[in-house]
Length: 201
Image 1 (cartoon, rainbow, N blue to C red):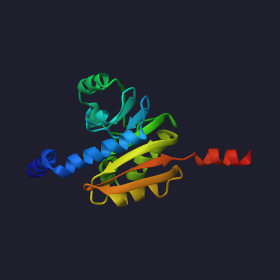
Image 2: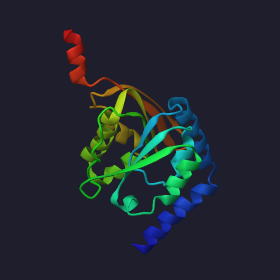
Image 3: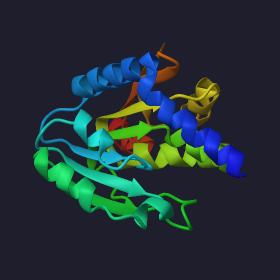
Image 4: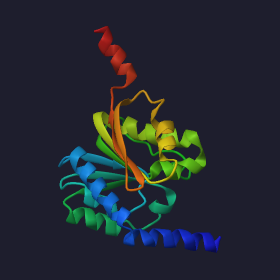
């Protein structure tokens, strides 16, 4: 077990000297800046990187970080300080059922979502957990809201298919494989029940 943890820690440390890592950061920053404007309300799904992803976002954003129990137990003071320096607001919500269920989120309340590695972290709990993680994020988005995703695992395409193919809330999805990851954006469509109401008018 100690050896496995050492190898995992070493792999993350080596990210910092890997050119592909920095190229992916640049591609991610470009995608986020193209999709998320100043003053947006943003949900960061299963946030595990502290303040790191706040720096992709423009000033004036209000960010809600969805935290698992391990992250919720940490001191978020440094993250709040970073948000303040960036001219951003920061709130947190905690996952339920010891991290197995999404937080209670107000439907259609966010302009955008960041989902960086969240599907890979949900995958050990099974396909239903992958779908439910993405579904919770999509339901929290306003219609035409954008979900920006980055998945670095070898089975990223399968994870995205599991998360998106059966969803009624996906209006459009654009993705590309770059620097060892799949990155892209999902546009949230209208809720099917609201579509039916509109069609009856």
